[in-house]
Image: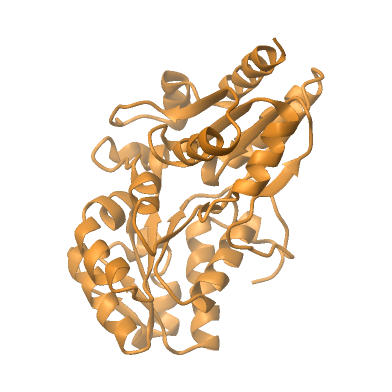
Length: 318
């Protein structure tokens, strides 16, 4: 695929990486529920490996059940759909057929959070990180760019056990490069500083990077932890950073209840309580709107990240 992945939409990198994985292991399967063009696997995977491609139609629960059956026979199924369908709609099937049975099924939720924009509130799932990280046996991932997506997919194919991953469909700014390696349960320090700890994941990490770089010009040194592994979570890196800075801001393309911010508060509450500000979507449903509008409405764009970092830095110094 070369070294220019950042020039491609994330969904196409998903399809191309599945082809790579199928070439290495013919047991890798691509399962779709009539959204394969949206997922980037049609025609990429369908044309090259039709025997490894299954479209079950608009029947997401059946897709998960079929995936569990295939896993029981030694296959490695990747089951993709819009995030709302890949998590909320099929939560019981995932719980019983995949997690409880500890089956080797990979679930991919596309167009997470506000990136579902034109499809509106019914399709904006702000809860998937929260509900998936509460499920026993489930690993939860949220890569931020194309290189990290590819690294996560390679890890998923080699790992034995249930995994849920958010997949941003659109083009994403480059954060990593062709040498990106994914390490489960580890945060990636993108900026080092002693003023404030900023924790991000997935879609929000490029915005967090922008905020950190702009704050540096003001003399606010941000310790930026990007967490592609939402579960298991890098508690050690978080606590060590919070000890140095004395305050934490979290930002996620999710509800502030139970996801990344929830994980951070649970860990800090138990091991090192400090002031925390959670940025993301409040306890509300989504709507048909642009990302810019939703950032402004809910207060988690770049300017809001910067202000929260200033506020928590001032508070922690008192």
